[in-house]
Length: 198
Image (cartoon, rainbow, N blue to C red):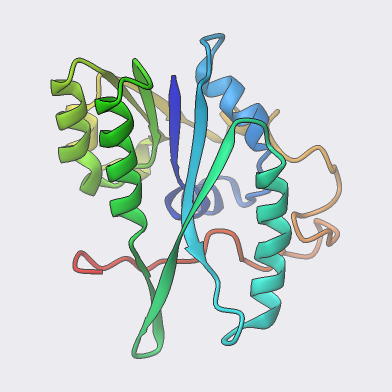
C-alpha cells in the first residue's frame, strides 16, 4: 500500500478541526495502514520562499528535516507564486495525481490511500480504479468533497479523537520547539489558497 498526502490540505484540516498540527507522520502512516504492509509515503506541499519570509523558510526546513528522517517517506515540493498579495500553490496537485497514476500503472501498489478532501483528485482516483487498483480516501468529513466521497472505494473519516495518540512525541512543544501555550507559527501547511487554474 502507498500513501499520498496532500500536505496543505491536511494542515488546514488539522488546524480547523484539532487546533494543532504537530503530527507524528510515522505513527500516522501506521494507523492509516491498520496492519497492512506499507510500500511508501509521499508527502506533497510547497517550498517556502526564503527571500519573501526567511523565518518561515527556516521553520519549514526544520519540519522537512523531520519528514526526511521518517522511514519510507518521500517529500515532493512544488513552488508558490504570488498573485497580487496572495501566494498560491503551483504544481502540487498535478505532482500528486501524476504519481498516483504513474505508480499505479507501474504496479507499485495494490491499494492507495489519498489523504486529502480535494475534489480535484477525483478523476485521477477513478483512472487508478480503472487499472484495477483500490483507492481509499482519508479526510475529515467536513473537509471532504462530494466528488471524492463518491469515487473512493473506502473512506477513513478523521475526527479529533483519531489523532489523540498521533501528535509529536515532543510533548509540551510545538513543531517550532515553542511551548504549546504559545500558538505556533504556521509554516508547514502554507500554500493556500488554491485557485482552480493555479
